[in-house]
Amino acid sequence: MTSIDDFWAVIPAGGSGTRLWPLSRRSSPKFLHDLTGTGQSLLRATWERLVPLVEDRVLVVTGAAHEDAVRGQLPMLRRDDVVAEPLPRDSMPAIGLAAAILERRDPGAILGAFHADHVISDLDAFRAAVAEAIAVARTGDLVTIGIEPTHPATGFGYIKLGDRLDVPGAPSAHRVDVFVEKPDAATAESYVRSGEYRWNAGMFVVGATTLLELLAETHPELAANLRIIASDPRRLHDLWPSLSKIAIDHAVAEPAAAAGRVAVVPASFGWNDIGDFSSLAEVLDQAHGTPTLRVITGVDDVVSIDSSGLVAADSGRAVAIVGLDDVIVIDTADALLVTTKERAQDVKKVVDELQQRGRSDLT
Image (cartoon, rainbow, N blue to C red; front, side, top):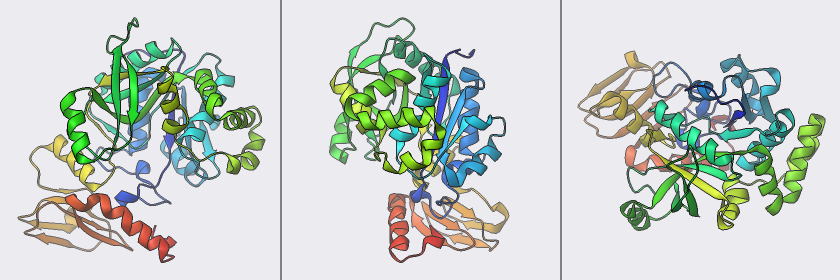
């Protein structure tokens, strides 16, 4: 697929991946790691799948603490292509600032926001879905890519499909009926059975100016301040702390959907957000076949007898696992995690407890 001249990739690279502790921490979040054994970090993989669509038109928005690491992993980016946030303000300020920068840099630009820590297996299907989303975005809509659910997940938001749209170059596109928050198990089951819902993966394609105009309708001060920062980067540090901490879904997508301004391109391309160790094990099992004990790091230090699950051995110690199914063992120099796939979502509670104990050195 050839590149699309006015299309820019915006990669929000933030978060600490607390459900992947102790591998992922505030100082070294999951997008900087090679978790899937491909030889490249999740961030680098994100950049590589977008390059055929954008060539060098990429903006990465990351925390100031990770700026050097991002530049080290993506040395091809220009100085102004990495934007460092002074402190976390969630996805709307990050993506909105990128939009304000692009509005000045390339008037008429269409941006696609794609998180730095997701895994996608079918690159051709992904790029085809993005191309459809761009075609719809040119009509003035905010467009999201909705992932066909493979199971009744309760950890994702959902998008209800509305009427099919008639947009040249976008045969799959629908109007978004409504965005739905994370459901309980029974509701998720009903969503999947109906065939009318898609997972909300947080992928948005929209004109840079369109996004800021939509934001100005609900949060005018935030939109104005983002444009001020884009026009005068010296204002970043004094204005950024005062910006609303809000996700793009709540700030723009949900109100715009209620006004009939949001479209969705349904797609299936092997997407996983690697939200916890169970998700990571699923990705590795799909890539390598029959479930067994997957070793992320430290292969020579792991001994497995009649066991299955996921292991990372980074401490230099030998790790032996005997007769356990679906176990998660993460052994680092200063922390050891032992849990199961079933309880993988609860790892975040460990991080919360450590923070309450004042152990910021471990989080």
